[in-house]
Length: 359
Image 1: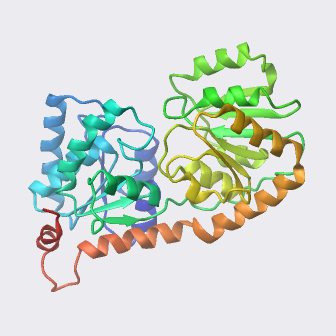
Image 2: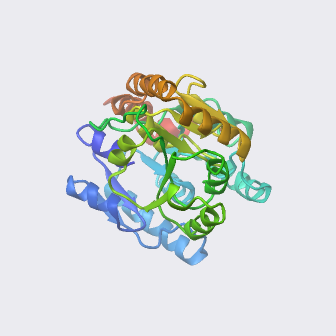
């Protein structure tokens, strides 16, 4: 969202509404973006807080009078679309990963699909970040073919570049220590990789201590480094030789693109849209969900072959430049906006969007 807002702010007048302060608010405000913090807008379900959030969102929409509302994340997506619809404003919702995606517990799927189906009836356009997510939304009839537009995630380029053929081989995974990320499978797999290969785990979260205990039980000692939350991820990726993402469920993760941007081969779980980013055997390796043996095999192969790492890293960088530059994502997102905001004299956006809503 930060990259969209900052990349399009010369062409779109944004007001960003969030539930808490932090780096996102700081970066947007530093660039002159109008940001409103609505503290009642939180992840957890609370009828009282959600009611306050809905009223606050309606006030902001009526005060700002936008041509459209673009929502992100499940909770804000539901409340934001309801508030916009009640004000007669068309909506775009980006499904970064559906709450009912493959790999989610059946109980969560059973609870979330009916809610998403209802809210889908008042959504003008869905943006999915992969073809896999588009297919899932249509499979559950939450989104229709006419509503969905696929816009792959992208990240801005940076100057830092890796040397994937360097020794010893350092694997790096950048991820929060919380489901659906699967650090446990990665640690079990890495235990089968011979020294002097190393593993860097970048990030923090409630399951970090459990991962540290697991690494100790496996006797990995100094070979695994827990680096915590970092603001220099691009530099860390440039110091590594292989990017890794072990996960049970994903949309189209930015960390894969960041590793490709650095020129790293990537080993990742074949979930969500990851297979659309990684060219199997060319830019990296894909492994099944929670498959320790398959993940270990891919890590061992890359650790033992600097030439393979160099070839895959170069192909990974080329793929990033050709397909995942920020300008493409910005232009495609703007095109979605323009579908809902007609040219001057073409009638009201709300009326047009309402006419297109599924029945």
